[in-house]
Length: 448
Image (cartoon, rainbow, N blue to C red; front, side):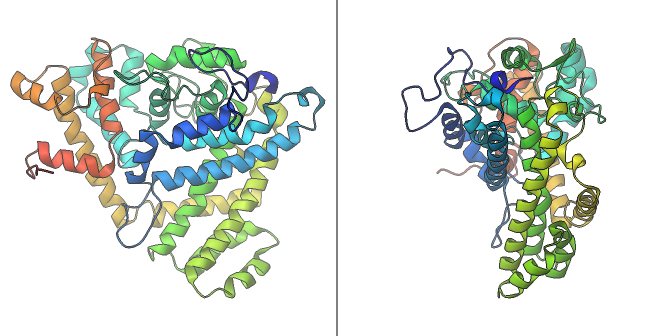
């Protein structure tokens, strides 16, 4: 792969554009960033769970704040890469090199757009609903379509949100550049190819069946390496490694900060988990922290220092493997390329986070409730859109609750199912709870 081809301002259904395109204030990639941040799907992230239930009096991260922070870290990684590439003779005249930080920053903003309410619990609820009703739905779908919905994937759903022409909505709502869209796709393969955990780009899948041709068009234009044509497998865009690193850095460190705010981790516990990542610097940093009065400020300072160090280490790992990445030969993520000491400390953090954070009572209660709520909504809306309920009057009333943009654009069953998943996966946690309670008769609607 070659950066002169990988960096492109081409947009879907539009002619290639100049980097500024008559708008001197913003480059094409800054326009990508702005289109995402001002969009409704992005705003809804403020009411979608990251890890802990949405806060009462104590603030913890939601999907929106997480995405903003990942974008900031991703931009830093991109800026480091720009500085390196500008030193290379073959890229000295490429005006897009300076835009790498903006490309990664925009893609990072969008990386969680496709996650349903209640996070991974919501994904699992969608998948399990169809597995539990395999006898009903499997005969209606081909192999890839079936795999798409029994392994519902938020990553693929994000790509769909950004590229699908929803009924009655402006086609130019996003129309992002090819480079931003390609960076977003960490798993450039179909659901039929996914599941090989030995290769980082095959752990999950990156697009549903209807969007496969769109991704292929982008990948071909950018010169991405195709590893298989049937089922489709591409080697990921190099910037996807940096997007993934930004996400890994943020959730590894910031979930600990949230756990401290919720009194799950003591200050001493935070010190034991994060100080070892500072290498030769822990003593000086701890002395600075001890001068602060508020424990939250101490943790914030430590978090900032750790993120800065991990940004440098992850970028160095990227650059050390640059040739292998450009040749499509690096099969692991950047976190697995770090020095052994850092890898070991990150594994300790992961182990402790699983034990005390991701299996905390409040997190488990949220996941169980979310699982039941999403499953309950599916058992109402999927049979309704497929006209499986004998009560047609009830079906019609139920479908009138669905916003018009989620009207199926095709009459086949798979398109109808996806249209309902578009609706359900776009819900915020609170909206899903309220709608579930109303249609199940648990609460009665009130006039606003």
